[in-house]
Image (cartoon, rainbow, N blue to C red; front, side, top):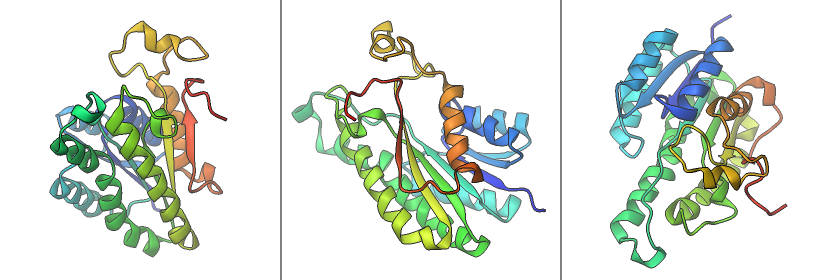
Amino acid sequence: MTAKTCLVIGGGRGMGAATAREMHNKGYRLALMSPSESCELLADELGGVAVRGRAENADDLQACFDLAMDSYGRIDSLLIHVGGPPKGDLLEISDADWEKANQMTVMPVIRMAKLVTPVMQAQGGGSIVNITTFSAFEPSLTFPTSSVYRVGVSSFTKLYSDRYGPDNIRMNCLLPGFTDSLDLPDKFAQMSALGRLARAEEQAKIASFLLSDDSSYITGQSLRADGGVTRHM
């Protein structure tokens, strides 16, 4: 049986790297991308391949896709985890920063979907997971551009899951709360009902569940894993 492959955009550090480790433990071959050498170091450790690049750059996404296909000939799972977009006081954020936030959050999901969908159709299925944020459905003035555009990712995810579900291709979002991979003050930990930050490894276990066949009947969902930070039901 051909080993499955997982492509990770944002696979150098934090939740992306932790998810890459989880998928490696599940027997998946890895193709990683991140802006720094961290993806290359992790790929060397896990026996995968890597290329440096930024999620907002369409050419970099193409290069990572090409590397995965040239190396393995298939892509079974795709994780997209991008950095935080610009912040600021709501009406003081420039047009350029709003556009940058769109390019960082929504467009990588759309661009990668265009690349991997024909591959997954030919293979008979696949799974895509977008790591976004708890504030997608409970907007925060602390993270205005993220709140606006990442709810758009959830909307696209639902549309995509409806369109390509018949091809056995699933897409879901993981909405984490405050996680220890970020340098955060204690006040953010105390916002959780659990009184602590999430561990990146905890989020990775959820992401790997959604990326693998373990979640074969889950699609079009935005799953909150925020430790109770958000209040809505």
